[in-house]
Amino acid sequence: MIYKDFKKKCNIIKEMSYKITFYCSACNTPRGTQTASGIPATKGVTVAVHPSLYSKNKEIYIEGIGSRKIQDKHGVGKNVIDVYVGDCAKCECNDYGIKYCDVSGL
Ligand SMILES: [Zn+2]
Image 1 (cartoon, protein in one colour):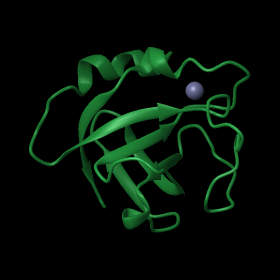
Image 2: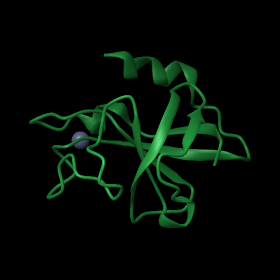
Image 3: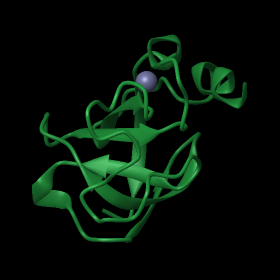
């Protein structure tokens, strides 16, 4: 599981860091892989941001995670980026924890 590496790579809290959380189709009920953009959520691509930061398909770079595209919105804090990690039957997102990473491109 590549996300295990996140623990080492990005837990450095800086002034401009965003809180990084993780979601999958299993915990994204009742929407599953549906996103606000209409594009199905894709592992390695999709992130959800606060509606005030939303710009469809805009590419951002999350330190320690990589490039992702804004394809979804979430209803939590403005400084939170929710990273989509997979279409699965059972959610393992809690195992990924919460990270604080620098983000560019927003
Ligand atoms: Zn999940």
